[in-house]
Image 1 (spheres, rainbow, N blue to C red):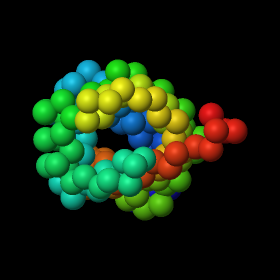
Image 2 (image 1 turned 45 degrees about the vertical axis):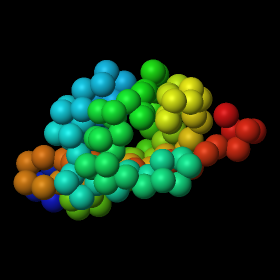
Image 3 (image 1 turned 30 degrees about the vertical axis):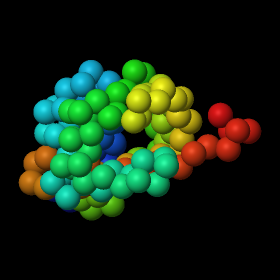
Length: 134
């Protein structure tokens, strides 16, 4: 059981839905929907090593610096410990970043924390997959 006595399988289901919603929001250009899912202290790391805060990431989405065309995000597992859920999976995407179109193939980790009755994305960290694992 996790904090609040919610079985971890229910939390895992909720986190999967939230992961779907956050990716759908950025592909759909719905910055407000993404913001509603993000913790105010978000640390969003990109596969090139750049790190954004919630504010700087939203600014880059609004300005068109990041444009997501497609994202697939298979989840390998979700670890739930208390009010923290860690999502381990992959992220495959077609994006435009800084005016350059590229395809991404990453191993990824997302960290969600529960505040009250809401789960919020606190951190994201992708790592480029070696060619052999793509």
